[in-house]
Image 1: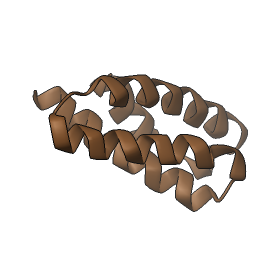
Image 2: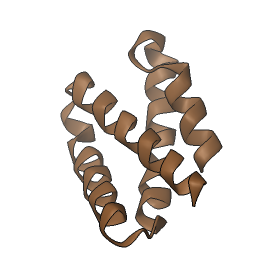
Image 3: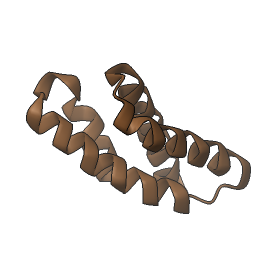
Image 4: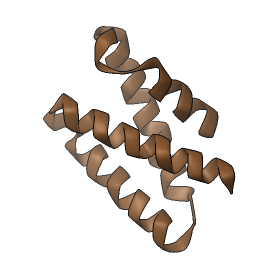
Length: 83
């Protein structure tokens, strides 16, 4: 279960990154990730985190390509390792 905890932490960082970006198109993804974190805390089932963590990873990679300073390499690495 250690990997699920790493995924939870990485997902939390992704939520914070999306919040800092203040881009409306990511508001839905941000709220779904927040929900999945809460759900995982409740039932320890990481399936939602895996699903939305993967989507978040792809979005964050795309943002980093356009604006490298907006997304940290560590966040992308943490998400990749935990997924």
